[in-house]
Length: 146
Image (tube, rainbow, N blue to C red; front, side, top):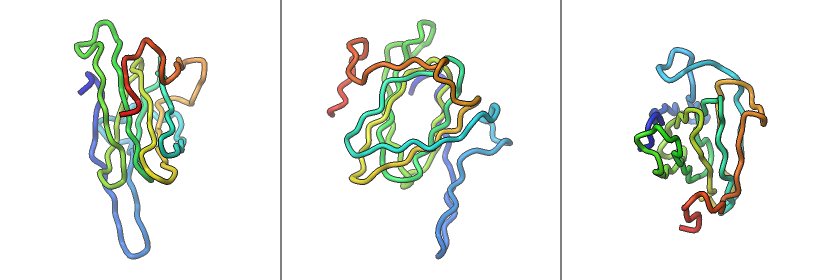
């Protein structure tokens, strides 16, 4: 487990009409502040990586499909510096992953159809506070093919 990353179980309420999938409440222990909610889709075997936010806290939940989230900690002062964590996101095991600023992360689509990840950021999305790198950047020793 990467230091400061939090996994929170979420509720799904189902009946014969469909589902309500809870994600974030302002009275939750992990809630900081609201900036923006957006949905990102990813196709089977596609990779969206690597990126980190210098200022934003991320809150990810997969509302459709199946996705592998990979987290990498290169924070010098962290006790998990140099470590990777893999987390499978899916509505079948529904939870929220909270990632604080300055932690690298990326996704790989695992479902045969398009998957959807919801992200609740602590401030509005801003490309200027982000850092992006190629999925196969040599600074990362991670095999996306496995």
